[in-house]
Image (tube, rainbow, N blue to C red; front, side, top):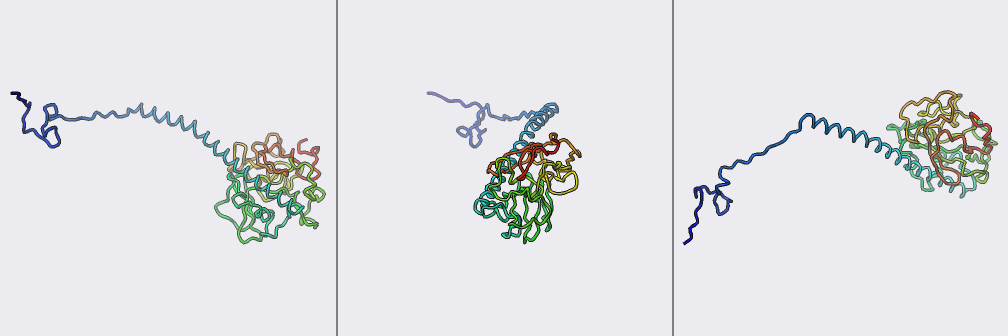
Length: 296
């Protein structure tokens, strides 16, 4: 006869145990948790590592954002250039100075060719929070506002080369060198070097060889005498840095010392990022003379 002997008291039973019994090795056993807290030194080390990683990653993330905005802007300029060229091909003339389509400038002419309101805005220079009802110049990081003869203000971050306007055989409504106008699209002799659309603080401008750069690369204002020339597009908007406040450029400063870049859409349809110092190397009007270039 085989006899099984239980160690312990048979009354030490608990629900859920094997056969309803508590075995001796489980009797009155206390489970304990030994928790290990961080020491101050360990905590400082962890925080330091996180700070170093953030310092390494944040500039890379910022550069990625800048590059993405620059690419989006280039796409917008490409759309504008394509629309402008289609308009000129369909009408066999340059863009009308004053559009009766929307009571605007070129903005009312390019919309039928697929240009949306979004394409008028550079991601680096969006709309201001409050839209005034009057004409307002933009800056390196804000769009301009066109509020003249329109129901709702039009906004944009790009400008048009005024030398490519058509005045319908009428004299321009303001003093200018009419002989420098491109009379027809076919009069553009160097389309790959003639800008159509580009980053600017206003909707259009008429650059000249002797123009100075803006005295402030944030506001885009010319050095001397006012007027809308090369100063309106010498903006610190692309090229690795965007001005977000006043960024003075010395009076009579050397053009080769200009920082930054803008995007250009050319008369042959291609687009490119141009350093500001190279803007004088394009052929902005019909009789552009490199011998007269500022600083040459």
